[in-house]
Image (cartoon, rainbow, N blue to C red; front, side):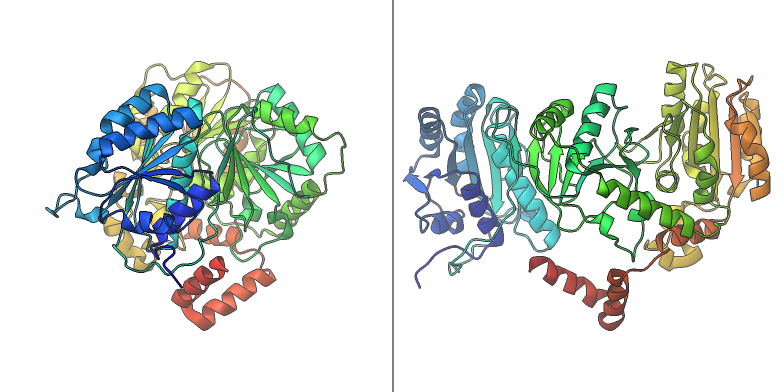
Length: 580
């Protein structure tokens, strides 16, 4: 057989996606670094290739060709200073919004700054030559293959986004001499849709609308979402920060939290993704994802994105509601609700822990209260047990760090003195942000629960690397011994000095004795800090109890395979099965 495609995986990914996105016109400038790319496409009759020695002229040729043909046009050049010669033409394309794709070939990226000949750093671009620039290394892992796929898709979609414009892809080569690959890989294609596009059909019988962190749903948005759920057998899968309170809400944290149990309700035919970062680690197998966001950006937390809908959420649901008239019994909602009830009934008595505090407190928060949750143990625990529908919840999941939890809640409480604001967080997050407790503007509508286990639980929890170090994790990985070493006076004295009422509990009985007072709708004279002293080992017991309640055939099989192959062999098997 004659030469066909290079065996370099990133080159194959790029070529497959160029074809999938309909990009066929390419202007090639000679060189060695881009031979694995050019040598591959010149054997494929799909591509329409032109040669131009001068990269400056090549970029301007691309401008004229893109303008006249109304198609994206790609450029390809070698290493060294070749890409620098694209700058004038790309500047022209930038200000005229022309879809010119500069594909620059590179030696491995780790050579930056190491005095390798014919190598220039292309990590940073001028402000007005491209609208997006991505770096595509040679992939040595599944994570890198996924990342390359997302970045290439994103770059190609950017060529026509918001009126269009030039884009840069810098792709590394290993200088392979092997051009024996006869078939391109089946790369996932991500498409972008607007209301002017030909929109795809909703396929499948079980549709999951997954909502990450989201502002409070307007009545109009909630109405069109509920109508969609009625017509398409859909649910709205939420965490505490989703802030959808309609009749199709499912707080699925306890179901999704199971490590060895994968019930049928977790199998959806389509996920419609709204909102931003979530604190719930939901996992779906082989389920295509549509992302609906006005920004039209490629966001792929489920690693299964196939469609980006650049439009307002209300417009999206209105469009699909018009496409279907019939209303059906929502069997998918029933399936989730039954699973939820089953697990809640199965849950044994938890020890005094963050999860237990949530279990006792969530249903008792007063109507129209606002809840702010700390990262991560508090947020994770509160995602297992729902509040009443009139409580809205927030968390600093944007940066996803422990700082600023109380400050964010204070800001919200100052904005509406007539509402009660509750903040739940751990001891580290509290001491990290305790300066704000001295702010003179704080009013009596603020109430804080501090779960004090004297350390950073995330570095001790089952499954973490720190867990393997036992108590030694507190030396430098976690934070045992800081902030008074679980002192019973440090926060108490500070809170009282700052004008707070201070409550304390060391047992379940003490907590329950204070709970009705703490969550009361009554207006008190002072803000309240309620400190609960918890053993880190009890937090871990509760964590494992909520994760390992039930085992399915899937979970049993997983355990048997792990026992036979070991953790390393099991991970290798998973990688093989993913590719099948």
